[in-house]
Every structure is written in C-alpha cells, then in structure tokens.
Length: 322
Picture 1: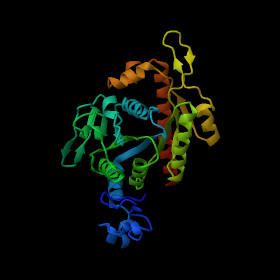
Picture 2: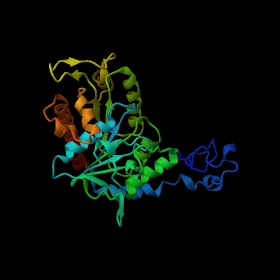
Picture 3: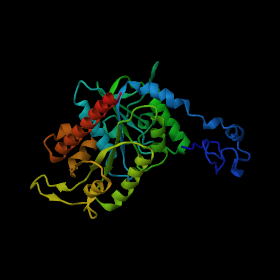
Picture 4: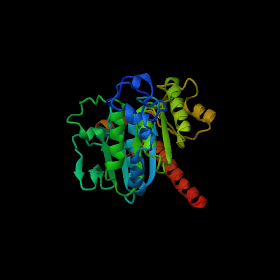
C-alpha cells in the first residue's frame, strides 16, 4: 500500500512507490529527501506492534462488501451478539467505517465515550464479555461529519488496532465500510503479522449489488485474505401474518447462490427481510434476543454456527501442520 502524507503535493506517488521522491510532482515537497532515500519503504513498525498486541486474540473475522447498504454493520453486530451469547467467550467488535460509524447506535451505545488507561484506550462494553470500539465514541455528536483524507483514516485504524486494550479475546470482528480502498488496504496491511481467519462477504440478491461484491471477492484474492463465505441479506420478505415469502429484491442473475457456485465459494445463508431487524438496530437491541423464533433469527444462528465451525477447523488444521 502506497501511503500519502497529509502534507504531500497533489500528485504524490506514495511513500512506498519506486518513484517516491523522484518524480516532478515531488519537487518542493517537504518529504522529498526522506522519500528519495528509500527510508519510507521500510515496513511500518506498527505492523509488528499490532502483531504483539493482538497475539492474545484467537480469531479475527472481517465483514466486507463492495456495496453499501447491504447490511454489513447489522450482520457484524448480530454476529458479535451471537458469539457473546456464550458467556465463556470474550468477543470484541471493531468499527473501522470512519466516515459512517453506525455500530454505536446498533449496539445501543450512542453517547458513550472512550477512556484512556495505562494500557491504552478502553473499549466500551455492551456486556461483560462484549466490547466495542468505534470512531463514533470520539465524536461530540452522532451528526458530526468525519471529513478526512486517506492517511488520517489509516492512522485512526492503526490506533484502534495498536492502542486499544482489547485484552484476551476469543473473537475480534471487524466491521468495514463498502469498497476496496483505504480502510480495507489498511486493515489487511496492519493485520499482516497476525493470523486472520478470513472474511465474511455480505450481499443482497440483485445484480447491482453482486457486481460490486465480485470486486470485493477479487480484492480478497489479491491480498490473500481467506473467504469464510457469503451471506445474502434481504433475501425475500417473509410476511409475519401469512408466512408467505415475496421477493422484494429479485435475484435476476441467480443471486448469491449462483455467484457462489460460479466462484466456488460457500454460501453461508440467506437472511430474509424482517422489519423487526431494522427496528432492533434503531433501538440498539439484539434482534436475536428480541425475536428469537423468527425465520431470520434461525438463519442468523445457522450462519454463526458455520463461522464458528470454520474457525475451529482452521485451528485444527494449523495444529496438524505445526
């Protein structure tokens, strides 16, 4: 990843580029001398520091999608709730959507603040075994806009990984923004010295979503990030009265099922639309606790079990190869 300093010239090639400090756009830049020396190409020392910091985290799961509005944060929150329902497990949810942090609202933590301790930032706790960190806790108002360029967002993600006192965790879930850009490159780079179990890819059934999700899958393949599987959100609407299913977002090209078959990826499940999911998120409650017998809740729990099985199998495979 080629980082661009905040004070760089307009067409900066990036500090890690072979052209760093050598192009015409570098003329007059205050960083030109150090870039031309090659010193900026050295690995970021934070990568090793993060490796040490997260060595006590057993499983790390990224939640990704190339498309916005498909329910990544909703899924991340309910994955965290479901994993933390086992009181013997320690779970944390990290929100790296710097410009659109919705996790504080979904987790019922709006208005909470982060506190500094001798061992770093203390995350905010939903329950004794469920911790949350988001830039939303650092804003004076939920309506405040975060208007940052890439380098500043990257620096914030680095701080979240390196400076938060996560403690010993069984699961760290990372909720990401849509796309394949700064935040995604940063999180993959900064976690490169740790063991990442893989990514859960979120989509909706229609092609306008799938075409962006395919880009996210290519991103994972290029950066060698394992894919745990795909979740299709908003997969039909189950009427709470008659129980019939209607296709609100028709899978005109076969939906996630066809895409997974074409790309040889596991389809973890199809979560039906349920207005109570949105209401639970707005109220900061767990849909899985509020409506445990709903069709959507049952699909969620099956998906979570598949993710737990995947993580357990990876540990077993690594132990065999050790």
